[in-house]
Figure 1: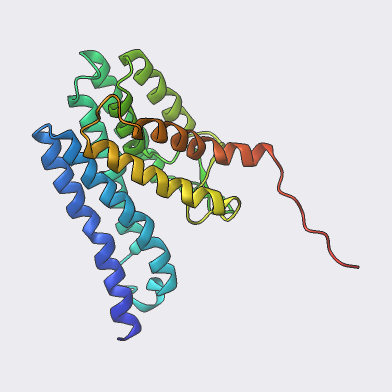
Figure 2 (figure 1 turned 45 degrees about the vertical axis):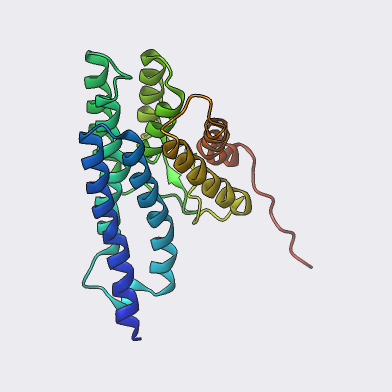
Length: 235
């Protein structure tokens, strides 16, 4: 199999995210929230796989006809922002004006963030909260907090998108990756299980979502506070 074919297959894998986004949206319109989040979890898993494959098969060199980065951003906006924002709006968790505030803030701020050329840091982390509203939405569905809590979380994270705070990329941020990657995989499992049991309030997966979400939200900030150890050079 030629390098072009392998690279193009990676592009096709990335493009399946658009299909999963549509399936998630169709489920959301029918208010089948468990099914919607299951599709979003599948899309999240694909997003975690296609990046390493794209770098391994050097898609920029072997299949440059498709801009993989642009394709990825388009799909990420659908699965990370658009569908989750709609779900929060229609879920009943945000009555009246609160739903309008949340859906406008999430979609507007995220559009600006996705177009920001300073999105990535030198260590391949994210500068500012990386608009992972899919993770926020599934946690809100699982915990079902009051609407003031959801408004506060959205406001804080939307503001954090435009700060120099660092948020780790589970695959590409090398520092603490031996811990971060398993935590991200655990989050994916807990999210899928929570959706599978239709967000049953006594599901043990909810605690797993809380712990893993807190780590993924704070690991990059902790890295900024805790300097990396510099290796000593031999004289």
